[in-house]
Amino acid sequence: MNYDFLEEDFDHAKKFAEFIGKDLNYYKYLHNTEEESIAKRILERGFHFESHLDHTTDLISGTDLIELKYFLIKRKRYGNYTIVIEIDKNIVDYLSRQIAKTPYHFSEILTNEAPFKGENDEPVYNLPVQFIKGYFNHINHQRVFNKHFQPDFYPEYFNTNIRNLLSGLNNNLS
Image (tube, rainbow, N blue to C red; front, side):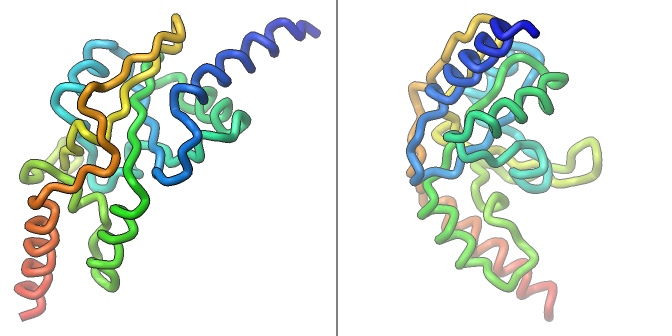
């Protein structure tokens, strides 16, 4: 058996984990893309996701190398550029409490533009650039950091999004 290959593989996962970081105060999501130009565009414009954030991303701990290796194997077919998203847990927990006992998901609040219907007739939201830590290039292990990264970003329009969701729910109940 070629153990050099396993060591190289472990080293790759370790570099990836170092980029993600060990901060336990953030929820960490990963999304792969085929083209670096798309990864760069996400750093500039935010991340479009369909329906819920976890429909197009994988929630990970960021600290478990086996979990990261599994992600790399599972998602490799989607591309060699992994977008790393981190959101303060306090924000997610707060938003989740605001919409408890409703059909809504916290990620529907985290949009900085009005949702639109996507190809699958599902709403598409845009996650602000502040939650994008950057991307990792798995070809050359390059780490690209987002200068706008701010995982505890909480603009006033999140409160507006909550009110709009809840008023839409109340209008549907009338």
